Amino acid sequence: MIEVRDLRKVFKSKRKKVEALKGISFDAHPGEIFGLLGPNGAGKTTTLRILSTMLTPTDGDARIDGVSVKDNPMEIRRKIGFLSTETGLYDKLTGEETLKFFGKLSGLEEKEIKERSDFLFSSLGLEKDRKRLVGEYSTGMKQKLSIARALIHNPEIIIFDEPTNGLDILTTKTVVDFLLDMKLKGKTVVISTHILDVVEKLCDRVAIIHRGKIVANNTITELKNEYNAKTIEEVFFSLVNFEGEK
Ligand SMILES: Nc1ncnc2c1ncn2[C@@H]1O[C@H](COP(=O)(O)OP(=O)(O)OP(=O)(O)O)[C@@H](O)[C@H]1O
Image 1 (cartoon, rainbow, N blue to C red):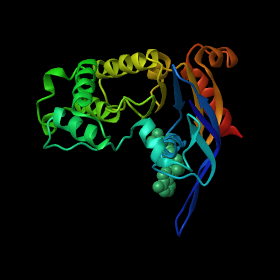
Image 2 (cartoon, rainbow, N blue to C red):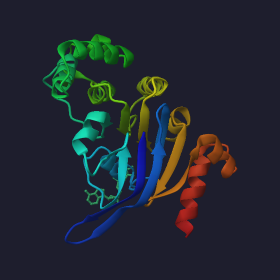
Image 3 (cartoon, helix red, strand yellow):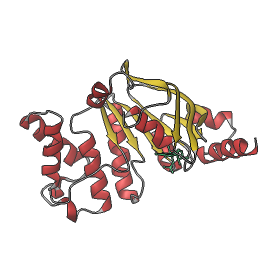
Image 4 (cartoon, rainbow, N blue to C red):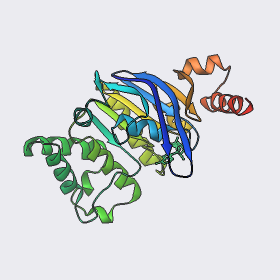
């Protein structure tokens, strides 16, 4: 379970100060896909980077299975699988060697690496490409391998920043189906996206984030009811416009 409480983040440079997060709170539960939805610059990546201990909050805290990201970042890293838009891969390794390398870094035994790799290559549709060099992979194949890399150690908590960005509809479907399967396995999944279609297909609950604040947080059905909207897109526009008028 993820508990986020009053997270604040201020980026300061010599010339300016950006208040990226102005007090973000939400919970995400096992067996649930929680979506952070928001326009460019809203604070989605900053939130997920704090959850994954890549950034420290200026104030507030987040707990993952009771462990604070501030107090115990090393334990948090063992608990989570984090996919960022900058997740790196090495062109000169094959897909299989990539998972072996990151599996060893996570302290897994050869047998576990083999079992996890077989599962991940097969469920992400990369089986026939596992022995090819990553340098020869397409964008979609690289994204699927980055997902496999993030989950080699079978974490209970999955934190994915923009998992379907730049993917075609077939690869998007593979990733969406894969995450739905993770949810059925009882994992806690948090994703960020600005692709509304993905939110509708994937998320049980959505927090709409705008200018560093959560302006709505509910199930998709409840949000549509609350804003008298047929689609999540309508909900999104009424909230973002509403905020803009203030
Ligand atoms: N390292 C940084 N230094 C200064 N400002 C930053 C830094 N990282 C993010 N910001 C600022 O914080 C705000 C939130 O950025 P963030 O990347 O979290 O947004 P986002 O919702 O993920 O947007 P996008 O959809 O464009 O990725 C923006 O104003 C951004 O310019």
